[in-house]
Length: 300
Image (tube, rainbow, N blue to C red; front, top):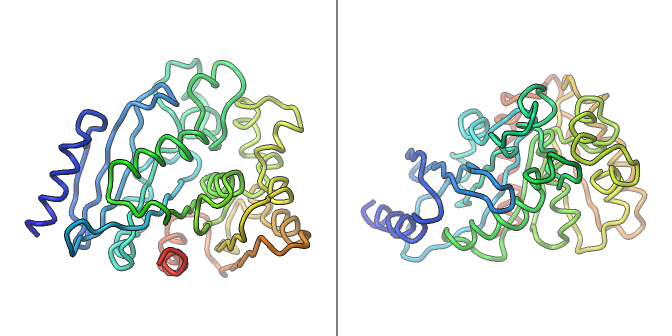
């Protein structure tokens, strides 16, 4: 125990000038922490959660799983509702849980609508003013936060995976498809798979990118999967049969059809439709263990 505390103290000493510890709670032998830092990419302060599994030997390093949350969420939703810490400790995986968007940027009406602005970054790089100064979430996730985690915490550099829920599932797919080979595995809970055709997300997406069809398709995974040119990718998906967004917003069938049309078999998708489950965290917590087992098999 003392050894584990000394290890954490060394981390905080190294990074205290760059990131600020907001909270720390012991969980399943490890520590669930939340940090805040100024992001040059987003030009605002950002929070992210990180679970550090229990350390057994000196200088032990761990694989990493990034988990991207959905529309309206912060870093807190998955931390407090999913119970992932049990599995992160069991499989010895660091879990990084970013916030879902820039916040408090003094953009007019950034908090007026639940599906536009704060909590609705769509994980893209915005093109239009006034959003483009701050809403560069794709670069933040795949570059800035990615490097911050690798440079700060005891990470095995080439063992990084990604997961996400709903809009965060869209974000996780974006990261994997647009950064071939960067993530060892991808898993999704009720992902948005054809975002440019989602009535719920369309307003927020076009506010950031405009309405030009070609531009929207560059951030739509159903179109991106057709052009993916990287190593073989296995994707695990769980979705509930009673998910209220399944038919109109998730559009998983569109993605599956596009992936299956590829003749090189590079995209291998396992889709599980779970009877009676909805879109929320009771659903996510039920199948979280299966996702950690999947990622552990790819990261070990």
